[in-house]
Image 1 (cartoon, rainbow, N blue to C red):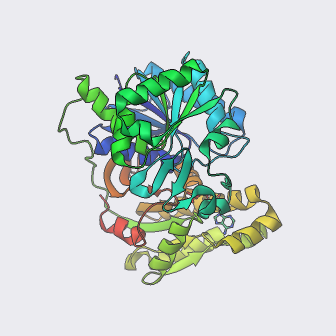
Image 2 (cartoon, helix red, strand yellow):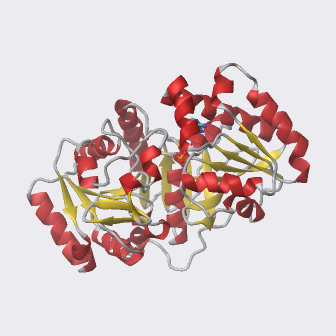
Image 3 (tube, protein in one colour):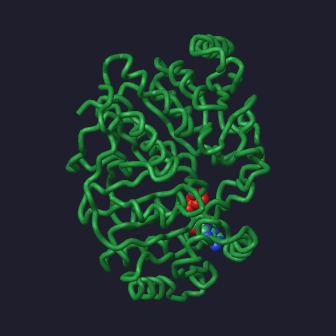
Length: 422
Ligand code: ADP
């Protein structure tokens, strides 16, 4: 198999979001959870996304995982590489976006790449290097309260510079508006100044297409899924990708459905409240889990009793005060891990009971669920909401999974997704 674009994503839902963009632009895309075992039958595809769970790992682990993914993608024939992170640039001064980017540049013998998390369709725009979430600056948005990666500075030039050895420059939206040639010239002058990274502004999909065209010859591109919008066209222009091909076909996966929500984003909290209006719900509690209460067994038994009447909701999602209270008592990492592990075991219990369609909210939460279910890869199908497609697993039993990054989806996302499951 020869793939055109090899991607490495720092979390599972982010990987799916990127794969979704590539599929919508006509590239058949498979997402693998880590470099695959040699005996895995990987379907034909033009793009391969290796999903890691490296966003909040210690930085040396994140680098090692990213480099081994890169090596597999190089072996599969990819000539261009994409490092995908969150459209809200989720990271801390300890890493990992800058450090992983520099390790990938070194491994590819390159000295320049871009960083562009913009995703205008979902309200993430960059203006003079400042990231906006809707109308709010990043550090004034709900991201300031993220349980794992609170974002307290909206200037991505500053945020990235704190994570890199080499200097960070800016290509602002006026240059982007001037077209791909102008952007390429801006890259060249930043490079001449010794800058290895360029934060690139984007306020619209048109800007993303321009940036995509300007990046045709970059070996490594880094950013959110939005920036991938313009990449497939480069391959079409080079005659490597057919026009008009269907890229989102999925096999059908009949069976009962359920929703698992471990994200505490504002969007997810509204989605949980919305589903609670019409469907029963079960709340997990970090304090009860820490005290040894069998919330997992209770939740699975509770769900199995109700599943014939329609999808139940099991959630850990809670408002910032509740999250903080649990974190103060248990520590941020332990509270998160307890709930992720509980969600993972609940997912296993539900699948053992015959559930075949799962909607999972939260990047880390999805990662824990997918790992527990032993899923090694997924095909990417049609989009439910911007950034979130239906997918089906490569192994057995075949499952339909919708892995939703916390911030994504309309208020009625959970039931809407299950209504259009493959
Ligand atoms: P998102 O996509 O919104 O970032 P994630 O699943 O990646 O969601 O991260 C949310 C983190 O918050 C997970 O580690 C999850 O276990 C943790 N979490 C969820 N609910 C609570 C809670 N009530 N108290 C503390 N931590 C929580």
